Length: 296
Image (tube, rainbow, N blue to C red; front, top):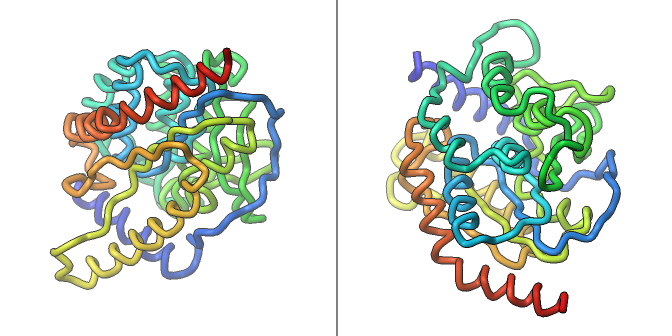
């Protein structure tokens, strides 16, 4: 069953890509949360199961007492970011991730606007965040989604946090779109998969961005499906390269041995993210010192 779901995921992803539904471009924000000034923001990209690396990065930041004033995430980055913003310990999230599988997350359905509903995933997320709104968060947080009809970027910063997470991670054709305030919303990665511009617009003065997209295939392109996957990876890379330009630091874990849909590689994903964060620590500490000196 797990193998069937993985094949279905790739089939729909390829179909969506080549029918032009996923066109990576900049949208306009149709919701504008109040502007503030945030000294240091953490920006988390989409990346499905590769998002385990986000947990490793955050674990290292926590261990080194790096204070975050804002978190902005897209797709899996929104799911991880929302939990961290709510004060859920990263070690607890890692422990919970060990029990995740596609079977537990994907609720297959034939009817509707997606092959899978959000029922199982929503129940899982509400285990930590039931009835939590953006007002309840310990760190300011925003999730990026896409309006299915207008194609515009929607920045979610109010209301129910879990609903915002689901909207931001609603992969088109895979998951059922989420309706919020009259908008039918799908994955934010379509318009802004690494939401550095959104963090800037919200008032972030300095940004640490974490990019967990799959790297390009280097030496093992052997089938038509490999060619299609590589085309998708190239498009994603070009998109993210533009988005990351205003980040002070970009952490890019080495994800060659990991897969978007392998939710079993928790330890490897977390350690890969932690390794990349440890390598970036000198830059991060220098940035924090700069922020503190400018504040004095």
